[in-house]
Amino acid sequence: MTHRNIVILTGAGISAESGVPTFRASDGLWMGHRIEDVATPEAFHRDPATVHEFYNARRRQLTEVQPNAAHRALAELAARWPGALTLVTQNVDDLHARAHAEVEPASGFRLIPMHGELLKAACTRTGRISDCPGDLTVDSASPHHPEGRLRPHIVWFGEIPLEMEVIHDALQACDLFVAIGTSGAVYPAAGFVEIARHAGARTVELNLEPSLISDLFDETHFGPATRVVPEFVRSLSG
Ligand code: OAD
Image 1 (cartoon, helix red, strand yellow):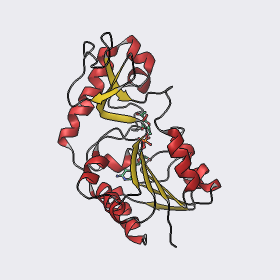
Image 2: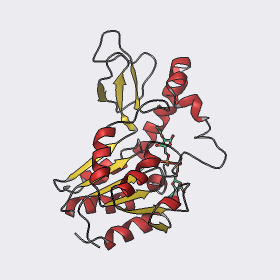
Image 3: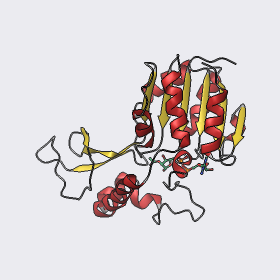
């Protein structure tokens, strides 16, 4: 089957084999924290130091991890794909960006980190974004406003993911939708498969095991991302 317009959604599972922990571990904790203690605007208001420390630790960890074969397979696909290829990631690590920096993506490629990026910070007064290579503290001053502070550029629960209009348009126009390593527990990303189905796209799930929404896909391939993603990419003509 030939396709032209592809949307790929990735989640924590694609980075798991690089050593980045997924979110929904069996103990229900997220690196030892309850999600509501670190990933909500209320948590940041209540205890910004703890929230900063949590994201500082995750940001530091990026220096110890590398893109894996699944990230690289998608980057190679982006380099050769003749149509539109929109890679939407829920991950806030920079592993897709690093894999794509190693090859020249084709002109139809774009990467959308819909839940923000660990290596960026946002001004609490203006919302403007700046690079954030190191730790943040409650005293980190914003370069954009004299009274502004910096917060992690992360979309927390209760906030609206980034670039939703662009993502929606890409889903409406796609003929292939692939979800990789995501549990289907968090909306709006978990609803993308239904938008793609309505648009008439072939829908494929690649995951270690069935997700919460596996039934919604035309096709499922189970196994570690470093195996199933390169295999699937090889199966695509174009
Ligand atoms: P989850 O931790 O909820 O799910 C990870 C998924 O990856 C599960 O379905 C696993 O089966 C699968 N998985 C684990 N190891 C894998 C491997 N080696 N190969 C393939 N699949 C594997 O992570 P997400 O679905 O990404 O939001 O979570 C969605 C959002 O919830 C995150 O972006 C985050 C979190 O709250 C924000 O930070 C805003």
